[in-house]
Image (cartoon, rainbow, N blue to C red; front, side):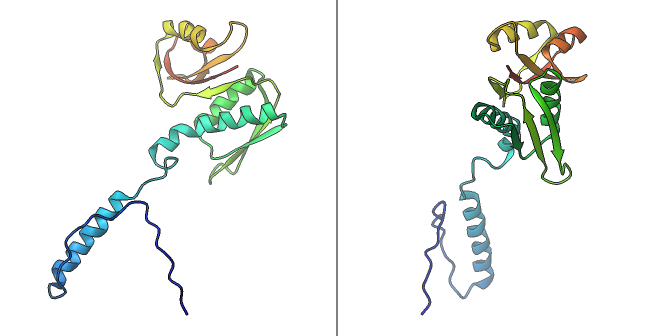
Length: 180
């Protein structure tokens, strides 16, 4: 009558010795140890955990680039972060996007971005490279395709700035990403 459903496991359980039924206190301790060992062996999803926080900005920027290449007028970014809002403010100030609207920032949140059709490439660095104020120009020349357009976005003690503003204020910081 009842069909048994095969159990799906992501990793085999370790072969721990089982206790006899008479020693119930020891059996419960070993069962707890077995369950803890099984939980340690569970294979985690690569998009979850601490690395996901560093990828949120890069995933959002890639979504915008892909929507722009497809010719879409808007892109919906989700999940969001405060750094992403700062990055989008710089893009808006420099004329690479028309406008953006943060929807429900207190919960999961979404950002609806109106695209301008001007983004060629836009990337965030998952490793935050440190730059001194003197090294910003060399980094810009190395990362951007030409001197005429594009911006490197840097998080500094004065806030999130593009490379021109960071040079003007003579501050260094960590590179968040770039766009052109």
